[in-house]
Image (cartoon, rainbow, N blue to C red; front, side, top):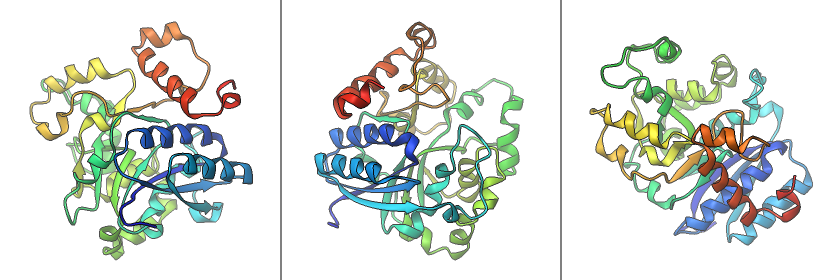
Length: 296
């Protein structure tokens, strides 16, 4: 593969192939550099692999397919119906890939040029991520620290958890990570990750606590939270300016069980402030996915 290509990664089983193609398509629409996709596929069929290959060809993206089996996850089992086993696939990236790579969850819509992110990770830094907005919103100046943060305190083993990040977007320097033999060994301990409530997210926060470069919040915007984010940031004076800008979302993250490709009330989405993000995903799907897929 050409060294000029930016490496990105998606991970999916059969259930999320359509969503993954929307992420790939919106990355390609905005990216200023050629791409190389490392797709971590669990339980895919030939038709799924063909669709991935076709999409990559259409976007001028090189494809590297990593076919994952159950045994690749050790003794881990799915314990949360909303978090499939393949969600832990990013833990494998430092073993499979060299150099820097941007991992993205499949429930996302990219609105900016991801090439910008690769310049934000300092040399020698292992990981870049975006602070978890739900945690930040609970840490507003003057507010009491609610019990909702108790779990994160338990995971990190300390009272202040403002560094807890969301793993929907991760910028990893796999070469830097591989230099740490102990870290590599722990990354491959899937049974340990399996013991946490939020599995890979909790585990990665534990492993990279104190070693994370924080990226702008705009690169992992929780859908329907734009107005709330502005108010919350106004009450977080300690948050660095580099994480506050740009103000407009560069990436929308469709967290929660009500994904934009599922049937749902538009009125309810409007009331929850989610309608613009919902319609943005559906417009992107109409551009990117074949018509017969859009009609499902």
